[in-house]
Image 1 (tube, helix red, strand yellow):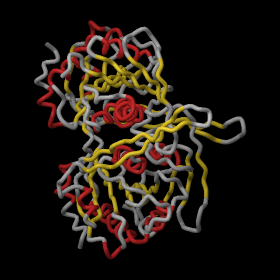
Image 2: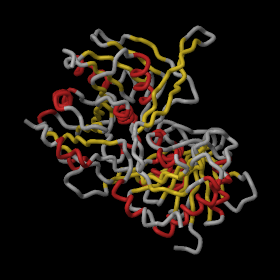
Image 3: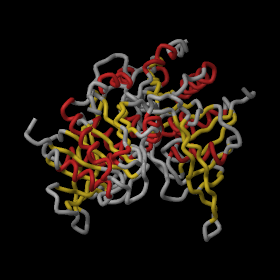
Image 4: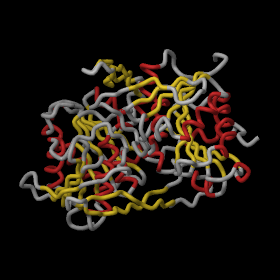
Length: 258
Length: 258
């Protein structure tokens, strides 16, 4: 590896989000940083990519840091694709996404723009980590978790990530001294109980807002939800081979070709 | 189970897409059908959901079939959430999504709106299947695969799907008599080699179109790509617990708490 690793930084809350600005500051201490992030918020975009529309990208400067920055009109996954295939001259050594304003633990990983960027990097063969803080507010306290972000990133660089795996890191909303430590976890079995808020617009047409309650169905003490509820940082290894290998035997008893 | 199963039908190409109309026709022979599908194409939307905007839904009639239909302004995952929590009075016995105009095999499952609808249903505890035909044209030949769609659906109803698993079914672009059979497969390791087509707009600003070449890196003969290339229908069990359980031991050697 070169003296300083090349680190691609992105997110889903947009290039001006305090969570991203904190992540850039931390990564500037570790490597050479290039930022390619959405020009507007892209939360809950899942792994959407832009194929039926055009993409714009602008080189911009937001603060006095040593990083190079580009905003992009697309989704988080678009940002990674554009960075790797168009903007960067060499493959980055690491991609970090976040720090998200809000949780991406358990089933939220599926809907998460933050994690889709990390997964996209993983698909492209780049070690990747998504960071999220369980606090949705714009002025969340990212100071409290800086040392942990740095430590996890340095460990990932030192140890290397397992092939086909990216990390989903979530931080509890706690002050630095109250965080008990870091736990490697599995994704909790959880779901959202949706409630649609039905309203009528000024023209008399009905419309809905999607709202819901998060429900953790999983009593296990090895889950990300347990870790976060008990004051730990959760680290879940996430794979993009979605095959449920353990069910293939069972499905082969269906005799679909008879 | 009631005499006729309640089947929720959706897709990502939009409510007028020929692939969806074919799927409705097939499902009308199997059960009582309710359609909740996007009012416009939503390809490559991944698992995006609409949280920062409003959702509209209209009860509509498109043909003379016995199904009940609603169009929805949201993503495929929104359609399933709205159907299950607002439109349907009882939980459906099955959710089918598609038939997609184009492949959702291997890594495409990650970007797929078709599969995100199936996965969303799975998260809500509903057995679900996504169907895709490896032909992107609007007038693709869906006749050729009708019997296979029916057979796989009936098998899923009869046998029940493993918990936490939905099926990703892809059909080769072949006439009915040339399809050799159905194979239970794993997701091939594949990627897209992106190429950004850089252009200049009439105002002189540069923009990009995302394009790319699909590359199958996986030589295995138990993959969906192998099956499709060799004339078989591929069926991959897809899970939404993304935890790479096999890497947890390894990650626990990192000593993150030292």
